[in-house]
Image (tube, rainbow, N blue to C red; front, side, top):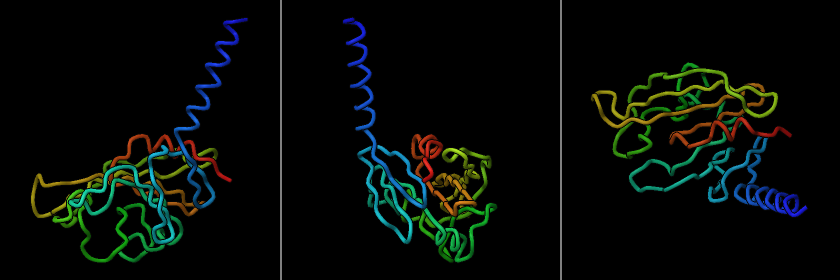
Length: 175
């Protein structure tokens, strides 16, 4: 009986601790659980989830974007999102994410696959390596990861290789 009581107490404490380390973020009909220390702010009809530092040398804080229909409509130089191109909503040159002083050069697709995005939903997952200066070799680059759920009009954009983001999205709960 003592063993049973100790095991029950241990499971109860483990469960409440695990729940206390995350918080829900709801967007476009789904909810994900993110670490408590991450911050969420509205950004152009979407949500920016800040996951780490905000360096003055970087074009954006360590984060990822939860984008909806507006982000999809203007995802490629003011045109709709195309699965054969990286996410680049503005026309012209953009700043390189890890270093403001460089401008984005060319991008090469590294991977395309299907990825779980909650129960019953699949995302098209695409990873791009974006060169920060296409005219020079071996210069700074970054990885852009995209999860696109066409049926739900959701586009997730990650420029920071956010640890565990794929697993977080795979556990999304659709409402």
